[in-house]
Length: 522
Ligand code: BGC
Image (cartoon, rainbow, N blue to C red; front, top):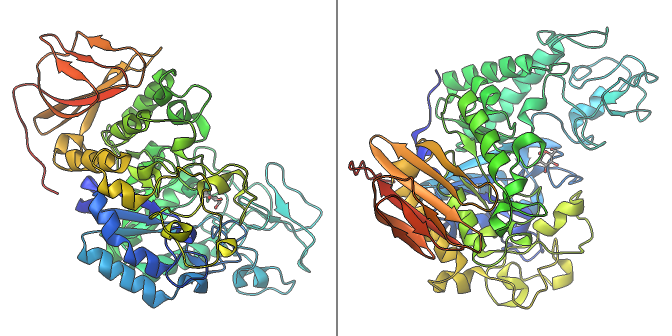
């Protein structure tokens, strides 16, 4: 069993999309020094960990998920030294940093790919997945064809400009499909380890891993991909045992078996995550149904041996802003949920102040519909919302034009703001181990048909009952024994002999049982 970095157990993450966070050099795009400048904002909110989207050299056809040099910070964001300084300053403030590792594909501008396109054999010929004839278009894959003198089609992993790195096939069926232990795939793994070594040796605390389940091909049960990650974990245990690994996989039983510490709940696929926040009738808008989400969550939770390591994000750079579908006080209830679930919570920059999805924007850097969730952070009420001193027509993405757009400075001052609510919730979570990342969860009400969501979190004798009611009607809970003091409340809630009465649009965390349990320290 690999070592688990202890800080992960109480981690509350803040996700930074570097382009849009804070520009300190006036070129209209965020940078590393901007993140360093704003560390105290993140710490003051209560977050103690950060995930930064890719900030490496790239032609930015997919906002940086198309890397052309893994070991160089994109000049528009600063230098490698700026990144090292960010690590150091973050550590001084008790903040850990995960970089985004994109192991499945590179940009087609990457020097490896350019070499691999050449007809003459070289060191990179097998770095990507190529067929042995340009006329072959393998079933089930998209390819890059006709751009090279090499006679072959190259499989892509996501957009057309993102050729798939070669980690081999679990069941090779054709001559061009290499086995996982063939020299080409082995060399790719070693190159990946070198990239990880490079950043870990500079002070990064680990990685969020992009499309972690996508690496080995013809691997239906993902046994090959799991084995590959076990290999990587063994290397980390040997050289960087403290390195934290969080996967974008969506199947915690598999990713945990591969040695990841935590896995993300995905907003696509079978998770039913969108039932809560982003569908026609989301549960947190007050008229939806959370039951299918709960059923799926429990299934994954059981499969991953109740380790509670499924991370639920408030949003991210790939999905609609939370505020697009959840309005008013119900946003607070969404955070009461996110900040009382097992696994590390992830707050997407600006969600803590209720930033809007900016409608009608032209796509920027392969954002397409995602662009509206990537607009600049609104720091204050000054020019460009305090994001940048560049002329407004030179900003990476236009600022939300709405007159009542929220901003961080005003909300930090205001005790009644959404941000202050989020800050209170993080503080409550961090002072009760039962609410932390490893605490157990038992669902009591599954949020079906406009009923509340209710669950008990427990750890080491401490038990906390959570009830969240986004609906318009109050609800009387009669089967929750032993409730005592309310440790967090928004809206109305009163404890009764048999349970509690929760008001409309309200949430409460209530101690349960005689044992007061352990107060967590940060
Ligand atoms: C990232 C996306 C990206 C894709 C391809 C994802 O899951 O979060 O933003 O476009 O991987 O790398």
